[in-house]
Image: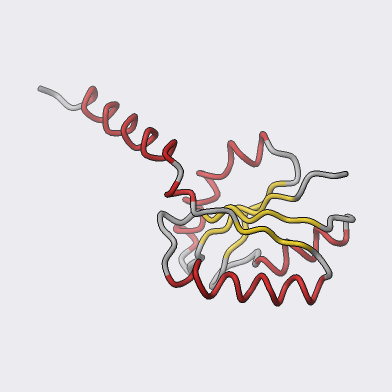
Length: 124
């Protein structure tokens, strides 16, 4: 059985600089996890639909969405699950929604590391 395709889901923005930030954050994952892609919920491409269509064209039937959100607000409680339901029906695939990245304690440790590095670089 093939492992599911990974979709790193960001909100999206019409500002290219905003999207570039998420693409830079995703770069280490994209380099390490085969068949991982960034997708945007709205306002930017590629959309989840685009990424899933491409995956289906390559034979994928299972996808896992990792939300690059700090918390599960309205989008993750209502909008994204509704989108997933539509995408599953439209493409005949199974899509699992993981918890938002902000709920993972490793992110808290990464933030601590960034703060500690900043403190080391700040003149006394």
